[in-house]
Length: 447
Image 1 (cartoon, rainbow, N blue to C red):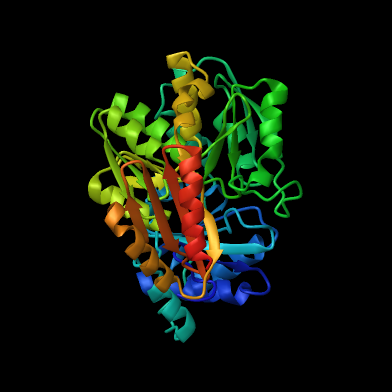
Image 2: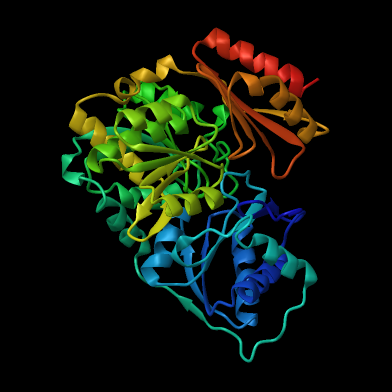
């Protein structure tokens, strides 16, 4: 895959990497590949989105498929609506957490199954570049859904928690001027969760900060507001609101893998023996709490287009990633959701009578580096050198990149799908040992 076609979606800078002609051809390529009769189209609030949507729909209908246009939507709501309406496929126009000048397209089949690397995006790219679009017998039609889909989505999410068990809580929520500002006011209305809003105004130029709380600089206001207001916890959403990030009652950020372990262990209490999935970058905390709760810990590849099919294969109940994605089994399909985790944390705090910082007290015993990116000329050669040095010291795992797992430490190195980068994550039984392992690995990677 090259250019705008990525492992999980299609994405680039508007006006430079992609434009209305791109959107039109993607519409035709998508229909030609899937041979679908109806495509649902949703959209975020980016400034370039309306014109891209118009061109995308024209491409879909020119290739003979009908369009169900649902308008503004978070990506997790988009997944729900596809199943709620019984639509067989969908395209969400969004660039997720990227800065305002970006835009893109997330592609799904029926049951919200993602189209990515190894599941169709390569074929769509080939059709796109060939540009050979046969004319259909007739063009498709456009239908707009007039239902209150945000309300339907909210009812769907709240039906999956013990809503009456949630005690009055105050939660700071930072929408970053993205799509959470559209859904959250409806989602938490008439619940015991009092929302303290930050940047709920929809603005595709993202004037306050990038809608990417994974970056430390983009969560400072959220952390400060939790401390200022004495809130029970805080939540930051990314631009299309398919990811959420937690801040505890002390204003401290809680990484996505630790939240996956915490929520996973809680769900195992309700579903004994359940399988919980997480990505290869995750702290040992995730495995430890899942197994202590009596569940099965399933480590897998990074990325929603890779994680969800594996969850389906293994019949996992719940999964999560360091990146703030949380995946749930909804009836007979798997999808991201950024609001259900908020309700589950609120439910957990209420029922256990503990603050989020107290529930995460064990976190202090785990020493993890976080992801460190390095530019390299020959990633394969570097990985072979590291493997030869460490193979005798631990167990080799090649689920995603190279992992070596020792008794008191582990590391994972992965090649980037789109850049000449190696990504390193490592963990050890003390801060000193983690830093020593990290520095030793980086000395090889960056030599």
